[in-house]
Amino acid sequence: MAFGRSRNSEPPVEVVDWRAVERFKISTVERDIGPGRKRPVVGQNAVRVPRIEGQERINAPCAFFGSRTARVGTADHVVYEDEGTQRVLCSIGEPTSVGDERRYRVYDGQGQDIGGIRRLPPSHQLHRHTWRIEQPGHPEITGLNKWSTLNPLGVAAHAAGKVLGGLAMAVFMSEPDGGDQRDRTLLWSAGREKVMESDDYTFTVMASWLDRRLAFAVAMLGDR
Image (cartoon, rainbow, N blue to C red; front, side, top):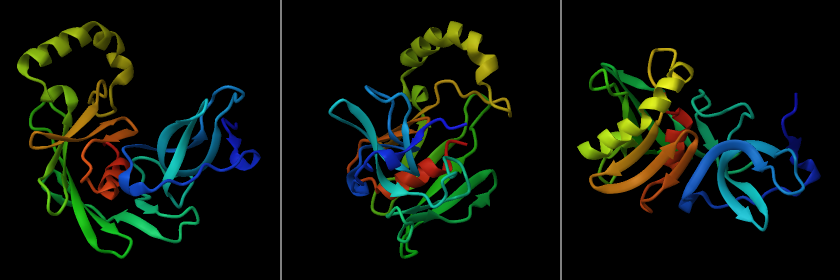
């Protein structure tokens, strides 16, 4: 069953520079449903920048995947600069394990190491895994569940506000391993500086110095 129409009937969305994107997601949708359009227009699977042009909501590509079926969390950990997938932008190497910690190295198009990503196991039963990003020349970036970064009063208020809805939805939102996916918004910080926020498949970059290729690598891995 086709859920979107090919972009052949409409002009392609112009590619934007990946270096300074502030918000992105991984998607095949180029043009969203809107006035005069009942179905989304789909294109190549890509890292896309949501924006509005006139009355249209579009998702401009800034980097591409070689496989149309590649998506967040798959093994296709290579991103290309061009739609023809001839120029590698970045790639993720095979993971290594240190105890329960998983480590990934990220490489540029010439195979040079540009940083690393680590997935750390939960610190105790009430917390899920956390993340770390290593970018040379900058402080380590920590990715934590956003609500866990609140002060105690904020945590209490957050928890109280979620109890009723959480009880009603828990059976539908639990993970196969017993984990909980509710409210899994990650806040990425370097010390007191907010670097990035991620919610499901959408990423918002707040620090201009963050190498976007590392952010794309985080998106490719997915919060698993």
